[in-house]
Image: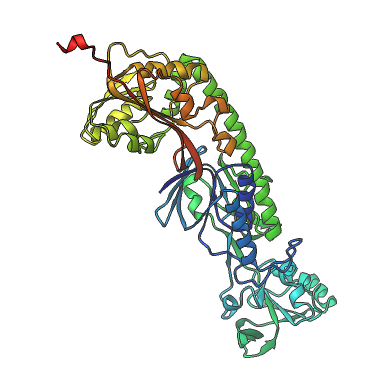
Length: 533
């Protein structure tokens, strides 16, 4: 599948879903790709989330996914295997074979807890083996707690956990003895220091009972605290030039993170990050807030781009010189293709029953429609303003063993002369209302008697349904408006309608849109009795 969205969110935790929710409510097309392995899955509940304290993490994610889907967001359970491209044209590949394109990316992949290699730690992680007192301290208050010294922050941890219980032990493990001033402070708080390497955690019925030392001594404990190394899950972003950097608290390195500014923008244009992938200490509520902030900032960035594009389109419509330059630059900016290369669905449906003859594809672009027609035996003339687009169309035809008659011309002023075609088609060729009717009439004159005119445009009602398009609603039309241009004495209108479809093409996300479709047959001239002999 080849899908395009305003934003692809990589990671479906609290940060990713919150960002996607903000974007969906802003009427952006958004997809969330998540492999379904949340970091907090072992925890029974999350805490310090106002109004949701004690909620199981899975329940929050399920509710979040439902909310995102309710605003049109697409949820993809898959693993991202590669990310490429640049601002406005990112690509996201998944293990399941999906290819998603995005104007912007929000990275919320979280982090990995690298736990000390002590038997029992991994098995009890998130239940009786803890690291954050704000997440779990209340649940083990007044119980026997042991802090295993696994890094430079362990001395801070043991003082912090002392706030929740008077029975706190520091296991020196393989660390150096605390400095004299620290040892004095621990003693003043009643924290006992136990020397000797920790070799295992003792359990009974799946619950922690004690900490076993290399000497064989077992110190009874109900909870054990460790300081993992927090590693940002950012490997897949390396091709974008995003590398994780050390995350420091003072001089101590806690792990790695993806640097981002307070609103989530990374050093790579078009890429934002939120949640634990950039802030190792963020709890669930903080990650959700960061996702909201990033989502709103991305929408503002897209809005600025949409406005610039609308101005460019207006200039391209009204200034032929500017228009040609704009289209050339747009095609040249994409090393491969701007469009998908697939035939327009309307053309494939409406031309399927037509006998091949001469066809004119007005606004042919890179030749998706023209090559499809040529494959079916049509002699195709491809007309477009951009020479780059026409060269790509000719190359695509050549690869298929076909040929096209490519002609560089501005459709807004093109005249057919004496030439006539059995099929004249134009897919998503848009002009301002004053120009549109004029162009349509000239395309109609190019149709041979008995031939077909087939025009497909974005339906004028799409903008009122939240579909993001440049310009104003009146820039677009309905099938009935297109048909009104034709003289019914010369034309039989066979189709003039608004045709719904699910868009997964270049400039939409997976949203329901509508096409304005006009199919009309030019009547054969009447034969007078005298001409029959």
